[in-house]
Length: 75
Image 1 (cartoon, rainbow, N blue to C red):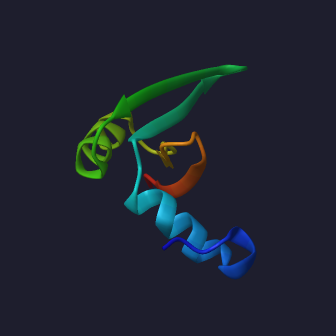
Image 2 (spheres, helix red, strand yellow):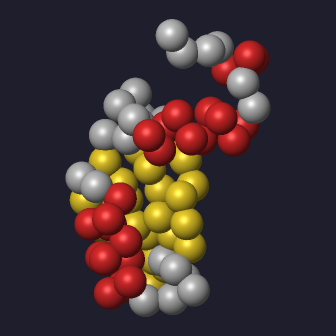
């Protein structure tokens, strides 16, 4: 049974979103107000895509309800 947000830390909350993610998104700024955004169904697939996008790409997990959690930054 899931805990209410008030009963878990933010790290537990983010871990829950990542574990139950509907999909993952990689986002990289390409200019003023412009971003390159790509999606993949698994964390391994999005890490491969993000590595191809280059440094500064941020990976997010998107949960089934639309909530998002930061996963990693490609350095």
